[in-house]
Length: 281
Image (tube, rainbow, N blue to C red):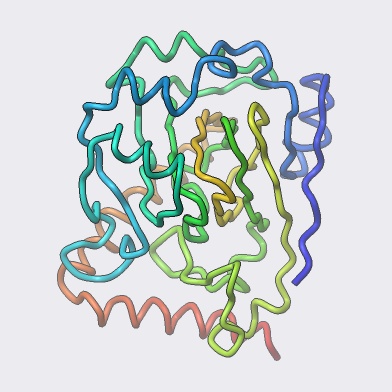
């Protein structure tokens, strides 16, 4: 399928951003949102390796969503410095994600600024690291926040879909993800995906992608690199929905995985296929 390129903007006002992107729920790439951040100059593979290379960190791979005892758990652990050596120089499917790095290194919070482009930013930040050609499965952010994702050093692509595409993407019930591989879709397994319409964001060093709340995204590291995610929440209703999602995931989904494992996975996949098949008529 063809993907529409996400807009790139600079020197945009908060009002224009709200009217053109927040209000309609449309992704956009800021070329200059992080231009004054110290992180844009300081953060590199060597910067993190020299200061925090001794950390033992959890590694995730494509087994993350496999049923059983390892469901949504780390595949292994490595020293941070060793992992940075790998992703800087060679491909790997190991990822280090959803890390609240400022808890371990609070001084890093001095290296970026909360954007003034809108209100409602949350106080915590997450970092994501990945090697060349690693991917993060198709999902939407479970807390339903808007996400501002700033990339460093290299390049990665995100494939994005609006919330109204959920059934065409084979949304697995009781979760915020899908087993559809956007880069290599199995059209016999996921025929409704042919009707989906998406966008692609190609982000480079210092650029920030705005992902509106509930938008699906599939992440592909074109080169090994890392990103910082800041989040903003614009309503009490959205916060409530995010809380419900978390409860549902960590009680119903995780509990049923523990009790039923592969059978639970099959149930979710079959339900997703039934929902999608209605759109093929």
